[in-house]
Image 1 (cartoon, rainbow, N blue to C red):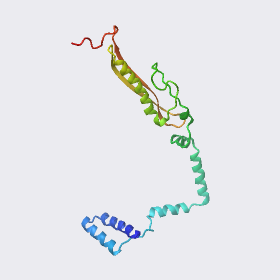
Image 2: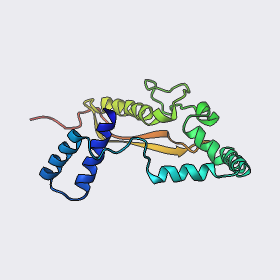
Image 3: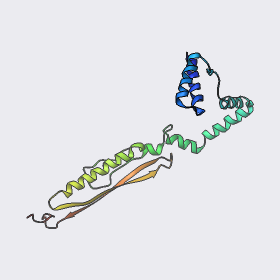
Image 4: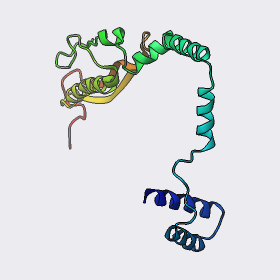
Length: 191
């Protein structure tokens, strides 16, 4: 039963690959499956696979040993070690020991004490921290004697020297708030 399914698939490909019309092709396909003709055996493999296997088996044991030694040297190279660390297969000490701390004078934001952030999550965590600064600026700018003019956030990118992974190394929030010197409202008297 399974051979018939493979044969039908093979007949289907040969009918449509030759450019025959679909109506004629579908009729020929159904008749071929029903009559059991033109069934491709399951055991036949494309030439590419059989040739590749033959070449591999034809190598001498000395050649195979030399290839294994070369492969081991490649796996021990600094570039391969760096790639394994970048993929998380090995531990990167620099990324594991990296600490983030807030350098502002705002007491109500995160990272007042040093904390670790995973490099894959650094963008979202640092951005959420910088948004805390923006929220504080919005709060300060909503007072009657102040007006928030602008707020912008810049994230800083670095590359780990040990594993080569790119990560967000910090952020900067710039705000401009206009204040009146005498405490009067910014917009002036309303009419």
